[in-house]
Length: 292
Image (cartoon, rainbow, N blue to C red; front, side, top):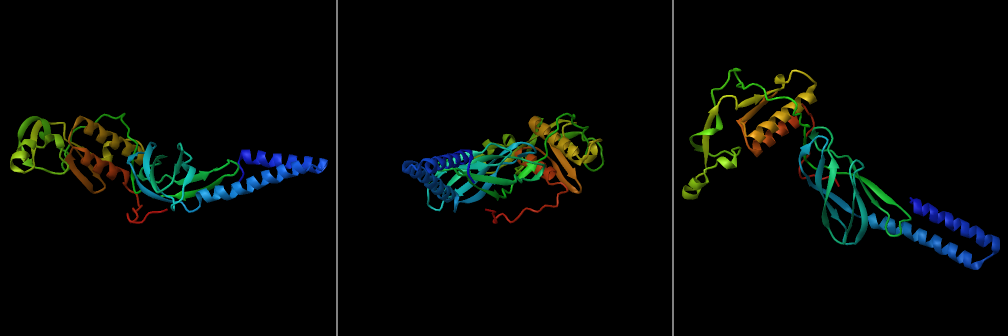
């Protein structure tokens, strides 16, 4: 379709043509037909600048609902140079790129509600070479990423209770008094790994500490007395982030699913994913299938 400049160009062609007809001016005829020829050639080259490009979703960062998430898109050019391709989503800032061969481009997209990341249709547009015509297309990519519930930090941490009986624990695996070693687990905090011993024996051990009660916490939906499901999940997300920041061991119980109290980046990721996918019937597509 013509751009604003394209419509102005066509209007000028019409004016010049009327002048040529009125005054029988051959130079005006020549200018009119030359301008019209440029416009027709612009249609072809603008379309050809987009034709044949393939876009592949390479991946996306995780994030919280409502945030801008960084994504990676691979652009396959079919061995032809492409110029001034505008790529992006309507809700976020687009990027204009030019490339002569296959390349990978970083973009940002607006995250919607919790669950699987679905940024919607991405717009591909070009007005190259003269800016007189616009060619565009809409594509939908699957980035296979998770959007966590938006955290709500307005609620204080709940009282310390065990998951089974509701009784308070006397001690927890904490960070105050050294209590010995145990075998390393993937969810352990790297700061507690006994690296000196590993250098001597080759065996990974984790330091254990005892601390006063009130630091090993279990979280569940029942601990949030008000609000709908999404609000409660947001509060639980805020609690998990608070505990991770303060390095408190914490566990999560949701509809029969249970994560034992622990700490560290991996444990936080597992808890956030459990909260993000709670009561969602969507199934992640085969990771080998990419929508282009």
